[in-house]
Image (cartoon, rainbow, N blue to C red; front, side, top):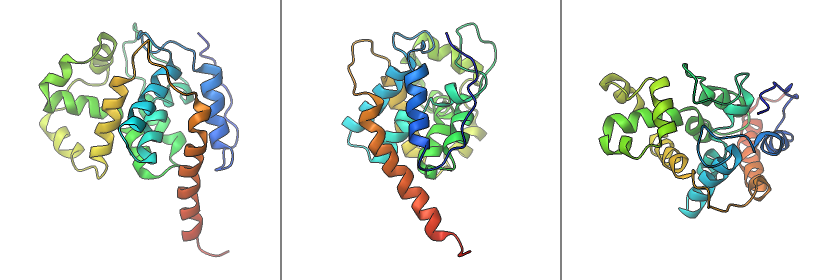
Length: 206
């Protein structure tokens, strides 16, 4: 497995999609946490589930990129032998935040917390987790306590975060065919342009 750190270029709204596409191309074939799919297959399956459910583009893009932090952080991917949480959700959120709207970033940044939330509020959800997901749940702090649940429920994007979590769990099928990243690239760029254009419109005149 290639876990070497690649220097990140100076990213702009015009280059972020190519940067993400390069990550999918170079490292998408890596194993996904002991599941029967690769990292790219997992994220593409999650996006496909969101798309087929009729979700808006921002949610589809969030599902597509929810695990991108496994690649952008210096730690690389999880191993079943890990004994600490690698916080890939924060790494992904940090990379995406300058270019994507809060709805997308929150779904990425909180999809791990959503697993903890669902395990605390829906006991049957835990029974649906794969062994690898149960393992990472332990590293991530286990089910939320009541105070954490209350705080999490105040997130304005709670419903979308939970949706992305559901698509995350659904994207682990060895026999599911999906389009490649290129299929979503134009959609991703639209979301970037819409958000960054809004920021430009709000910027004070020089």
